[in-house]
View 1 (cartoon, rainbow, N blue to C red):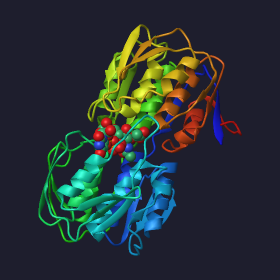
View 2 (view 1 turned 90 degrees about the horizontal axis):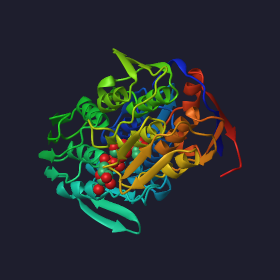
View 3 (view 1 turned 180 degrees about the vertical axis):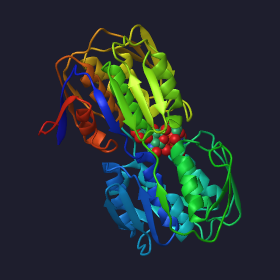
Length: 421
Ligand code: EPU
């Protein structure tokens, strides 16, 4: 098992490039199950969740080759329509194979994911959507078994906006007979990219990028190549790294239009931002950041995947801020760890009340999930002395060698193999 040892207090400077987005890749990869041929996804990040999805798709029969961020997926020899528990328990996004397998093969058996580190994350909306398209869905020994000789277009209205359920519904509806209308669809950039990808395969979709999507089912889809988008959460995490260390850095390969709400909050805290095409410069030199409240919401609102990093930043701001997570009410496992570093934070219902302190002091802390790990790394960069972040396998699920990027920027961070758990 690996941990990070961070000698905090170093200023950052220079330039790094943001990797491709994990969460869009995790939708684009299973979407290839809808066709028969060789698909290519460019700009795929080399992170463990991608390797988990590769293993799952290989089990299903997809032949893959992954080199230099180019992922080739050949779907000519599908041998199974099953997502076993061993894969799904590692990564909930495995559920993305449900829609395409059902649509293409009339059958899918997918292990039901259990709870996640910060509480329940149901998939009822995914299953309801499949039923609306005519599938019969049963639960058998911990597995969802979905069947339909041919899916039939239908009306799907999501009570709650869901990235994953919208993705699954889209992937099922493109091969359904007739028209499907999805209302209250998610409009996260990762879903918009998925819809664009499906259109490249030959799907007929109207309303892409809006909350009302109309799909006219087609008989078959063809393989295609697609360029992945940059990871907006990695970009946001690196911007906070500059802000929390009072530094000036430049990021390449950024789509700033995907980051509007976060950039707005970063500017409100006092950081100067300069955008140019696909670059952004964050200048936080000599900054004494102001406290800024945030409430997470669906896109284009402030992302829940940046909530933990924002709390780390606000723990060193002037004054008190309230950080509310309206998407995942219990996603606060990072707070007790930040308190070990000297932060003053109280969680009340789904809000963290963060009273800014003058400084944090290094300590051993433990990662509990992907974004919590990123938050602890950020806090460690700013803390005085040595911070050890344990269990960084969580971080490796979604950040491509973040320590290398931080080192390029001048941080003192080492990855060390340890027997500590
Ligand atoms: N929800 C339901 N029922 C469902 C599905 C979702 O009640 O069937 C609720 C959830 O409990 C939550 C809300 O709907 O309160 C939104 O969840 P959503 O379905 O949008 O989340 P997801 O698709 O499971 C993706 C990302 C997450 C990110 C969320 C929210 C992927 C692979 N994962 O999850 O990313 O937090 O959207 O933006 O795209 C991460 O990268 O660290 C991560 C957790």
